[in-house]
Image (cartoon, rainbow, N blue to C red; front, side, top):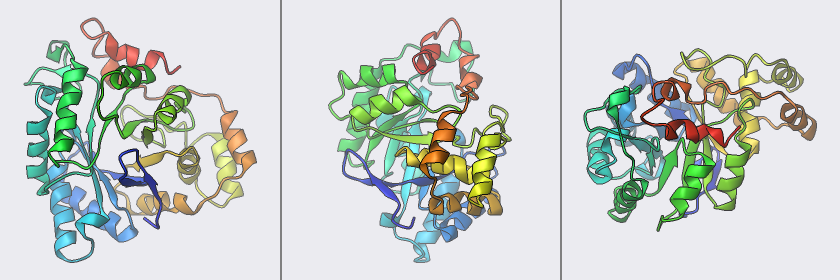
Length: 315
C-alpha cells in the first residue's frame, strides 16, 4: 500500500485504503477474481463480514496469493465482523469466521452493529421480531476474550455513534481500536471524529463515495458540482477527490468496486493532494444525510428505538 498506513492505539498498523468484499450477488468466483486483481494493484486491506457471505472467497483468494508467494500473511490486513445474532458468543463466532477464511487470526474484528439479534436472525435487514436486548458490556467482554486468545490482533466497532462510543468506554478494559462508519463529504461525522480522536479510536469510512449504484446509496457525492470542479482542477476524478478528502481527515477508507477501472481509479486517490482552498470549498458544501443506515433503521421502529438513537447525536 505504498507505506500508507496508520498506527492504531493497540500498536498494529492499518492500510489507509481497504478493499470491501460485500457483493449483493455474492458470486464467489467474481469476488475471488476481484481480490486477485486488487492484490496486483497494491490493495492489502480486505474487509469482509459474516453477513456479507464473502469470508470463504476472501480466504480462498488470499490463501492462493500467499501460497504462490505473492504476499505473506504479515503483508495483508483482514477485517471481519461480529453479526448481531452472535453477540452471545463472539469467540465461537470468530472461530467460525477463521474456519471460513482458513486463517489462524484476523487483523481486526469489529462489532458490526450495536444491535443484538435472536440466534436465528441471518438477514442483513432483520424483522422486528428478530431483535433482542443488547448487553453491550457482555458483548465487549467476549470481544476482549477474542483478542486475549490470539484470534485477532485488534478489536473495534462499526456503526457506533459518539454516544455509543462513550457508553462503551465506561466499562471497556481494552478500548476499541477502530470505529468503521459511513463517512463522505456529504456526511462528515464531525462530532464522532472528535470523540474518537479524543479517545485515540481510529475512524474508518465505508461508503466513502456515498454508495452510488447501491439500493441504499446515492450518486450525489460524485455528481456534486464542487467535487467535480476540484477534480477538473487536479485532472483527477470526483471519486478520487471524495476519497482524498476523507483521507485528509486522518481516516482510512473501505472502497467497494469489482470494476477494474474503478479499482485502479480508487487507488489513484493516494497520489492526489488537495490544497487548502479545495478543502475549504468542500467544508462549505451543504451536507445531506444520504445513507444513515436507513435500510436498517426503517425496519426497527418500536422494539429497538436505540437503533434510531445511533444517528440522532450526529446531525
